[in-house]
Length: 142
Image 1 (spheres, rainbow, N blue to C red):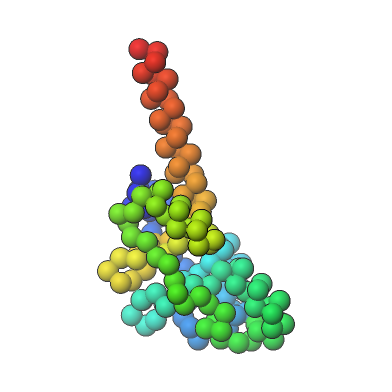
Image 2: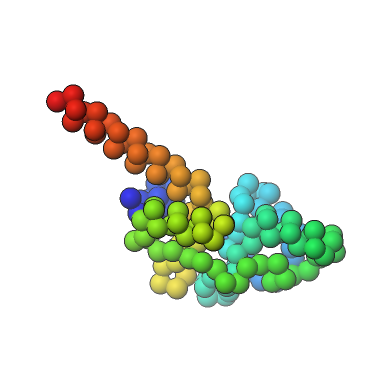
C-alpha cells in the first residue's frame, strides 16, 4: 500500500497559504476548512513551510496573543518533512511517528502534490490488516 493509493482515494487537493498572511488568518483558514495544518508555499507553489494548530497554540503560549498579528513565517516549521507517492504506508507511518507530527505533505516535482494525515495512514493500515485476515480465513477454510 502506497501514498499514491491514499491520494487516489482521498484526493490531492491541499489548502495552501502564503507567507504574508497573519497567524490569525491562518487560524481562520484552519477553522473554515476544518483541517489541522496548512502548507505554506511560495509564488511557484514550492513548499516553504507548514503550520499546524499545535504550532499556533505553542506560539500563543510562548509569546502571548500578540503573535496572532504577526506573519505566519514567525510560527511555521521551515524544515518540512515530505514524502512522495511511491512511499509505503509503513514508511510514512514511521516518519510521522519518529517526527511526532500528524500531517505530511506529498511532494511531486518539487511542488505540493497532496497531503496525508496520520488518520489516513492508520485507516489504510487497518484496511490492509483486515484484508489480510480475511484472506487467511478464506485460505484456512478451503
